[in-house]
Length: 203
Image 1 (cartoon, rainbow, N blue to C red):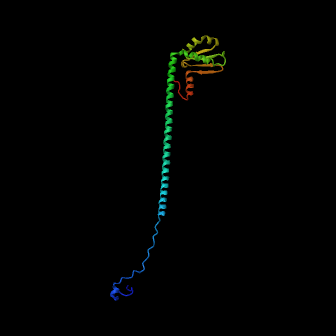
Image 2 (cartoon, rainbow, N blue to C red):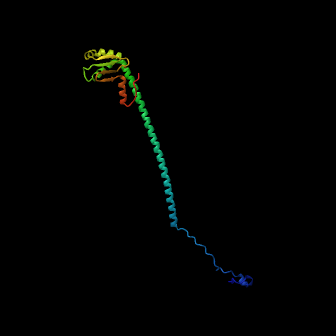
Image 3 (cartoon, rainbow, N blue to C red):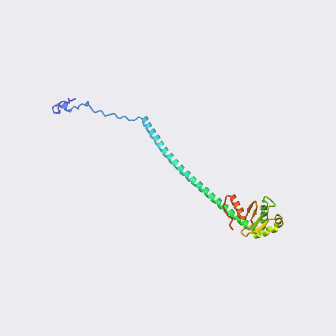
């Protein structure tokens, strides 16, 4: 092994062919510490859990928003259905009242004598049987009542006043202590009020 301090041209043939020493100091590189398999597994598990949590939060938020939207749609549909049902019910009620009115009008034309039971009922509501009263009727109904109740009216002293403004099938009774409105319009009003409707009787 040649001496490192002898110049190459001054070395012997043997020295010139002798390899330099491999013992020259070399810079030792800094050691790189690689993660272990367990550490890699923990990192992988942590990343998985964080990704799952983030995805779950996002999914939950989307699901909550979609649920709220569906609830709003269902509430709107329910309200629309309720309004539709109410409209149908109102229309059916109105139709029923119109039909009932037509049937009643036709019945009064076919059987005008139905005024007699009504007058009897009204007279029966007087507080005193002997109380003087005034019975207001349509002229055509007045003729029927005189024919059917003439004797009773004469004995009681009740007067009949004809008024063409009173619709056929109705009457009014006026006495000192009371007044009874049994006109067709008033009775119809009571019927429609009982079913929660406003449907005036208009001839």
